[in-house]
Length: 440
Image 1 (tube, rainbow, N blue to C red):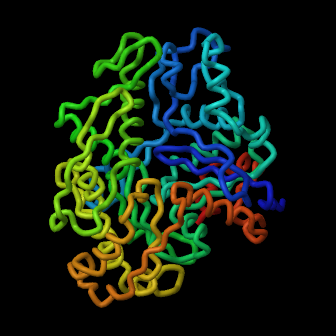
Image 2 (image 1 turned 60 degrees about the horizontal axis):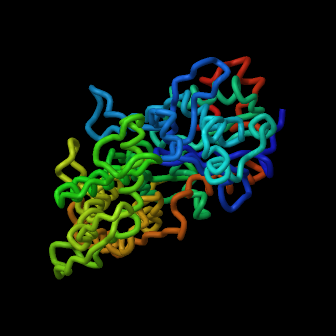
Image 3 (image 1 turned 90 degrees about the vertical axis):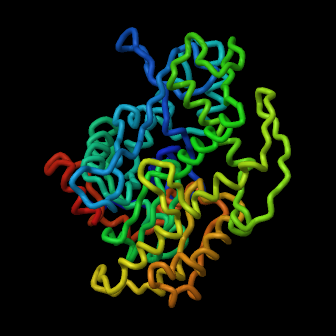
């Protein structure tokens, strides 16, 4: 059986913050949904129990469920082992149903249902999108076979997908730059990852991933604000702003909305200083008004929070040494290592550092990252001879890099010819475990 991916294959890219779904060959995903979804206790089997989280549906007492999280490293493994991706399969199924319009935006009786359907769910894929199109699925760079097989079983058994293929998110990000090799620095919501890619595959021995990224920065900002006596307080219909959880609203939903507000604040007012913060001139604080009317002095933290991505953070459980150190560690391991029968040349990788992920958008971050690599970061790893070759590449829109790479790959005619695809027939004959061999 020959499956041609172009032009109708669907690309699914699941991250800790958002799920992106759309057709290969397009410039942007059709649907972008939060990866955290609300779960309500169903009264009957016919009643929908999954809804998008939104202050307007607080009355449904929704519990926030994260579709993808990164757990602790497994015990008994090396200290540099990647955090383990944990998939909530029920939440993932609900998100896929949401993307094709088979799930309500809110409880049917809710007064805001019509507005929520308009605001949250447009545009959508068709009802039969997954039945009609092969699916190219991004997966974590650590290539968790348990998670891959669970997703495959869901897509074949529940959505009748005709064929499925997988690729690591770092390799797909490379493709979005028109490359098959490079060093991908991905700063997302859940983890920061450094992945050397060669011939379209991740060199796993030099993969470096830590649970310190956008969400950790948002929590750090919450801590700073609390030190100033400021509480981020979501406002739900029928309740005033209050640092305590209002009656009728789940604690997990309240925390989700508070973190969303903090994330919006972080993205709007935080930036990297053009020089290391320790040597920068102090800035006069200026007031910033929050949506609930509270005022906070911004200059005291606007640069301190994103600076942690560069210099590290020793206050977290597993000490984060900073993105430049992760890059240097990965490069040092690539020395004299062989991948796909060819030498992984450090000087080629260091000149093709690709910056992706939604938490990499801070002003001046790319410039500061290069300056750090030109300076102490590579010298500390005895790689100072590579410093002059450092080049960081980035696209204007870095949040969807893996999805965009999948869009490029899925459109290639050569990729659509059988060998990397698991067909529905193959799945029923051999089971989901065969997918691992097809996607190597």
